[in-house]
Image (cartoon, rainbow over all chains, first blue to last red; front, side, top):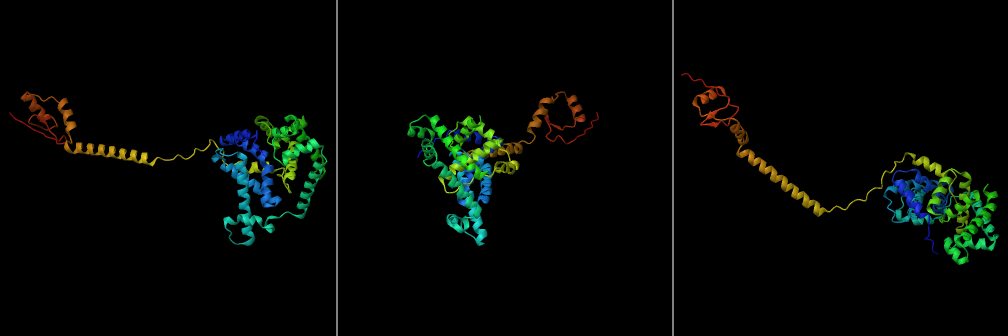
Length: 196
Length: 167
């Protein structure tokens, strides 16, 4: 599904330019915006919630250092995701080296990633908590009124923009915005007791 | 008010917020813990619907990173891309400059060797009128440091001559 409509992409460009011109605080805003996505992405590779935080930190540090050479040929988030994936793969490689105590070629990074005994370092409590969170969220979505459930499903599963959802559901874009927001609020209400 | 902010936050998660609004919201988010927690939960919901696992950044993630980046250098201007050097043009210019320099050196050296004192002599010749008067000439020969010979000013200025004539 088409997910190319990103009105806040202009903001990314503006913030990148500010950083390149010496405004360090602009980078803080990019971190706030992308921190959760990067941690989630890195964790899909690293499979360790604690290490994922550190690898995500390294990702942002690398991105900051390389930002002077960022020309904007691709979107900032695409560029950042690439750095995150490379950083996660390098982390896996160095971890496997420590584990086996011998050299592994860079080309073996994909195989290392696939080794389950290496990648899953979550504690049983982490796994249980994670499963509970996912269960609560999915159960909450089932109980949503239909128009909310359809709106959030089209957004999250199909990756449709608000405009596309409005067209599909034959309603104004403001209604789509409101339905998605209210769906999230309803799910968050169920989630709060679990997360505290 | 809070509900409006939360709705904008929901749009920010979906990248559907306009640039200026997103900028202002991120600035607010920076110092509002309640909003940060809501932002985190919205991301968690989004992740859980798409994948079997979910994980968001710790609450001190941005602050820890800010501390780590504190000692990093600040950018002043975007770095310029490296220019492609036109070697043919550069080499041509260098060769032309070398030829010109050699020509100047050769010319100045040959001038020095052929007439070492010509310029000095010309100045002296203009500034020093050669007197026709024989007496005056004698006087000059007796008192001047310059060597006169056949009405020409001597080439060796450093040669000191002294002459005494008695009638």
